[in-house]
Length: 467
Image 1 (cartoon, rainbow, N blue to C red):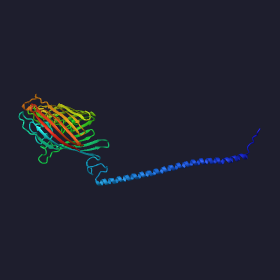
Image 2 (image 1 turned 90 degrees about the vertical axis):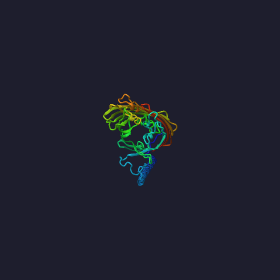
Image 3 (image 1 turned 180 degrees about the vertical axis):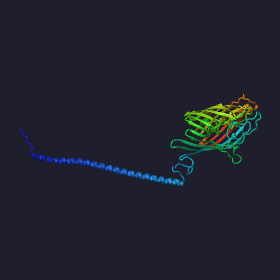
Image 4 (image 1 turned 120 degrees about the vertical axis):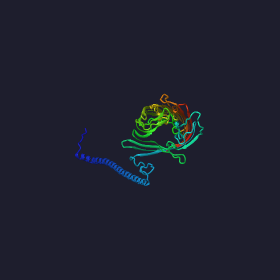
């Protein structure tokens, strides 16, 4: 049996002494490896910090260079009279010197040349009058049957309907929007009123619009709230569908909220005598303003509008009331066609329709004032052959109820206007943007209560450049 002898102390000590250096050597190598790794990471972090500092310094230097360059550019622009913001200006100094700082100025208009040859059955329209410049049915001559003069056609050429407008717009820090707008043309009522055609062909300036808006409010002169300008067809003539359209520009205060609008407008009553059919303006007699209201709905299909009018009719100490309604709109028929139309009816609608063809009221032999009923409308078809070439066909009419039951009706009463109507056809070509060249043929007729009629035939051409 083998017996194990215990290890002697000397042997144990020698074994420990031999193993200790190996254990110590292994621990030191691991630590050195980790320390090297830490040193490497610290070096990378330091490099990143130095790179970031260099980048920040570079950015700061670039920003300083840009700022200095902008300052130099502004100095050059100021020296040259150009604005610092780089936007185009008409002049270096402010245009709106009296406006709120930050207001934006705009300007526009068009130049329009009209040339027309007219043939009227019952004599010539007065030279230099409005009817020689555009289609005004009230100016078509009507004489006794069998007394028609032998009148040759006559030609007129003018640029009186050229116009311009100026506007100033401003939006406050609180979001309030303001606009001042003024527009004028050179019509002036015709050269017979202001100007001449002898040498210089001067014309008077006509105020068309002059108003200010503040958000939903409008104050000043512009289109009547009773009128739907968006329904008017594209005519070579100034209006074309004169009989059937409402057409008034006047001073007013208007409030608009979404599709609804209401206005208090300048009052004026036109009055005719039942005995003679002679008409006059009862200027200054009205006390109450005309009240108008409108609703409009629109979409990709076009638009529809309904408007109402309530007014006081007054002449001297006599007064009565009037009310009228107007329906209008535009219906798109595909990409190349649309229908535009209007229908009007009311008592005392006279001066609001057909350029005042009929009177608002009639004064009978007893001195009593009666509102006169009137109705009118138009329909127009527009077709675009190409984006540059289009045509328009239009029919327009208006008629008035001359009450033969009024006191004082007599032979002279039969001279009152009963009806007017017209047809128009045109072709308009735009060879370049903003440039229109067009030609239009028109036929119009004015009829009196006694069945007398006067006809108008006209060929008109135009060149129009908008800016």
